[in-house]
Image (tube, rainbow, N blue to C red; front, side, top):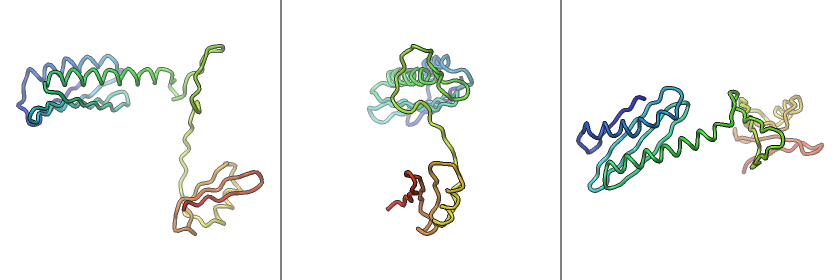
Length: 172
């Protein structure tokens, strides 16, 4: 784990650096690939703040804690980071390599709190007149057609089917 320590309004101390390496370094066990940690230690009057930015396994995790003692702030921020990492790891546990949730075995209870999978389709937006958009919508098999409405000054509009009718949605 690569750990960078920055001191702000505070003298650089080898003891603090070593303590940070010990406390933040133990978080490396939760990651599979290389991990980078940027630790910022700030002192302002009676407040000591520790901020940590962790980057690894496609995650950016940030935590900040403020107390009267710098060592206590480092302890608190490492505990917060550990909780966040565990939560994210448990969340990712059920996801396979293709980014989809694993299917629960038959008979196993499954909590359903919304759509199980959200598919993202990126479409290029072109300025079209309503007539051009309607022609293209009739050719396509999509349930919704989103376009930049040239008749409305390039504002976002949508076409969708409601029974036999086609509805044009224009924001106010």
